[in-house]
View (tube, rainbow, N blue to C red):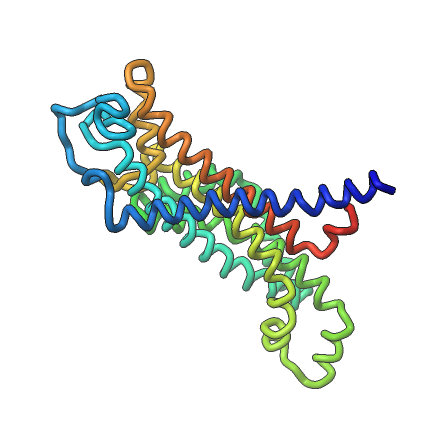
Length: 283
């Protein structure tokens, strides 16, 4: 019995641990991004060739790059761009995907089938590959990067919404709501969306990490933000030539990307376990 109680306590503690660590990392990331809007150690885009490739502590806390720019300032400013692109892309993808998923769940005939087959076609392509294809067609820039990343977010939220909504629509209180004359959109707003919001929040948190990683990949390939806008991915791309002589140029943005994605994934896992009512059943 004591072993069972101990295991149950461990399962309950794990989500809180992940939620706390993930929340702390994400909060720190947001704090750094907000701080960069009002203060950075140096102007991120200011060139100083005389101070190029100075190591950490000698040329600022994290050193300078091949153009003499302060690496810490670039990192802080890049956090803003990464978060803005990721949040905007996930918001657009979640909104469209949720709407399409609700329509597909409510209209189970040919309309729902066509919608979900279209989502399957988009979902068949790897996320980063589809974003690269769209970014190559649209060109560089923040708006184009947001659109390119948002497109592959749509089928993810559509499939989750449809599956969760179909379970809700089969409940007895939905039949009662229809019996009193409530319309389909009203049922969706009052009954379906509130009951699936937990699933959507968790998925949005996880997709934010994927969006940050995808934006970094696009910028690394020259398909993301156009210079001189700071970007973690382009910082990694620029550091390739100097890996042997100035490894800090790659370590700083690489660590920032890894920590940001880790924090968002931990936060998403913690939220999923916390919002899942079956977590105490030991599933």
